[in-house]
Amino acid sequence: TVRRAAISAEELADEGTEPSCAPKAPPVRAALLEAMSGNALFESLQPELLEAIADSMAEHVAAEGEVIIRQGDPGDHLYIVHSGAFAAFVADAASGQEAKVADYKSGQYFGELALLYNSPRAATVRAQETGTCYCLDRATFRTLVKGYLTKSKVGLQQYLSTVPVLRGLEAEQYAELASAAGVDVFHDGEYICSMGEAADELFLVVCHKGDGGELMRLAEGQFFGESALQEGSELQKRQANVVSVGRTSLARIRREDFVRLLGSLTQAMNRNLNRKVLAGVALLSPLDDALKDQI
Ligand code: 1OR
Image (tube, rainbow, N blue to C red; front, top):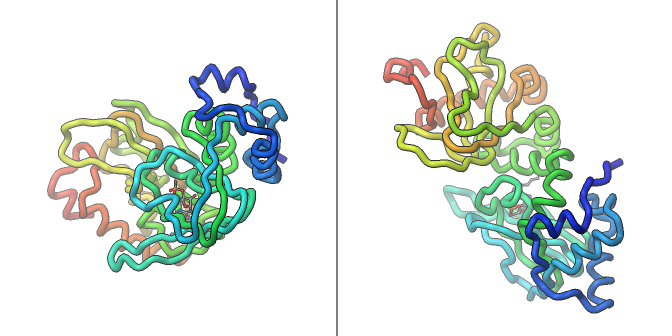
């Protein structure tokens, strides 16, 4: 069961959510409400709030083959399918070859990741046939839906599946990792971990906002703290301080959860992880050349 979001139509207005279009004609509103019904994002909301949301959504009629979302683009809308069929495709970075990763039918939604994590669109979504979807703007999303998605871990699960170093796991493993992981937000200058501390968590950069002049820095989708995953890592101590530059949200996964969930994959991933660190991950200070060689 989902806890009712503690939010009213007035609060939605207070957040500066100007309805992006005029109140809907009754049949359009009914169609929107139908698209929302049965969707876990909306099921606990009061009817007046659902109507306010319906009025803020814009209808989009898509032709067969139309690209609704393009991988790599910035994004500020979530889409809810009313009719037709839509599908998400992820392009392989090296070959450019696309693989279908999800299908969407009436009542389902897509495009939440860019809104949750301020990241570029993680997949391309196309209309598979003529269909209608409704788009929900970022401000409404932030006020209404984000809390639900964060709590439900649905968003984190999809996010983890887009992190390069975690590519290729089973859907179930992403779900398990997401429920074991926590998300924390750090502010500019805040220490995320300190040298000498026990290294028992891996960190993934979910969303990073900020600008600074340091030599190396981590971007969204990168990670640090991977020494927590190495053999004998119970004894491992943090080898550097990691400081947030600007505002950063991080998914953190405890070593014991990672090992429990991914078991024998850990070793293979360690090799992958080490390569990525050398390819320019920012352990901000003090990481000298000798230390880099050890890694
Ligand atoms: P977005 O805002 O990034 C593309 O825009 C959308 O495709 C994305 O939100 C999700 O709603 C949807 N990886 C990335 N995006 C996915 C995936 C996905 N599945 C659905 N979307 N997968 C990982 C593939 C390596 C599949 C996860 C189960």
